[in-house]
Image (cartoon, rainbow over all chains, first blue to last red; front, top):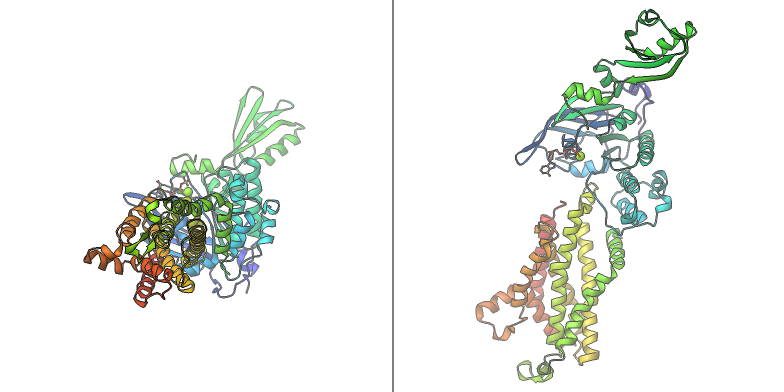
Length: 332
Length: 244
Ligand SMILES: Nc1ncnc2c1ncn2[C@@H]1O[C@H](COP(=O)(O)OP(=O)(O)OP(=O)(O)O)[C@@H](O)[C@H]1O
Ligand SMILES: [Mg+2]
């Protein structure tokens, strides 16, 4: 059975709905929510790590959990993954209760943990072969190796891999059991920009293959680029759940367009546009503040006057601004 | 086929120096102690046998086994736990029994190799005897060693970290060596101590080894105590196992 595109399209607005084949022995999920977290609470001794967290993850999406260090992101996904027992709240993952039925959960959920490792001297292929042997119907690990771009490192020991290569191996291990859901915690922390972008592409390919992904991160750029929806978490509470653009729009969606006009331009040319709120001049530069389709409106109006906007720059509010506005705190 | 066992064997092979040292220690000790003149004289307490004929190699085999079971094995399990190797595995459907079984089996084979090396070296250098009831000896050794290794896995489960694990193991090891008769032979033990020794798993283990060395079949009570120990410790090790 497959989730019909007409159902999925109601929910996924910007991307093609992902399909995932129903697997043997796993009840097919009728509801669109693959993960449901309600009023999750978890304390360590006298420290409350997760105070009150609720969110839903829909089939086929990349769901981001974004927040500063110590916000409770890892604790939240560890509860979802059945690695920690929550003090309060209800959890459902593919219809399974992670506390009551850990074994069933492990067959449908792949996890890459923030703090986990392999023996230093295990070779890449051996690790994959070993982890494949833990599942009844594993993926072909050779193909997986190819997919994460580690075929050339097949015989390299884990201890000799670079940070990025370790992360890719970790992703491959999370996928070797053919999970329907993959939880990836701090996938790109410590990677250089190129390795980070490569890893992002990998995550997108995994999602395109039909896996629902929960991505924990504290990089707003990563969340903006990858996630369909994001939960902003601060001090163990959810500040907001929305698409990245939806979150940005909540803080007003204000934009700035800066340029140097090729010829003098009257303020009225710009202020007459419905998108424009304010025009400020600093030196030879014009700064236009507004909302909506600001940049195209401004450039069109200028073109009608035969004016070229040189050094054109568009500045938009980011998730950082949204986080700041919603929690009163900076993300990083 | 247990892939964990296969991979762990390869990993051990890649750390061959450490493996070789665990093998070399009991043999070295055997050859050094074997030079003591008193131990090479026929001893009326041993029915006219020399101490090096059977006592010394049996003691070295026990020492090597307990070192592996109580310090090396808990240490490596605790390190795996500390590094997050176990945590990584805990996200898969693998049952911990598979991991513990593989660790036990691998160390059992290593202990057997170490015992064979001790016996062969003793024979070649000191003219020690080879266990006369060889099949019985093999049975006793595998049963007793498996029980000791299972107890080592229990220690691995309770040890808080990789630094304390070998220490806790050593603390557990010396009383066991004592009741096994390492320093006071069973024959001259006070009654209470002898009773403790008889139920201590290592006591019957050492006695059964001696019997088979002399050419007798192991006694059933000895085998029974070892088997009970093996079942009990294995059960405890699986129940108390912690991923992190
Ligand atoms: N095992 C633990 N015992 C006690 N306190 C813990 C434990 N794990 C986490 N904490 C505390 O709980 C809080 C939340 O931790 P958590 O790891 O969930 O945060 P996080 O959002 O994942 O942070 P980061 O971005 O640094 O990974 C932190 O204050 C942390 O110190
Ligand atoms: Mg974390």
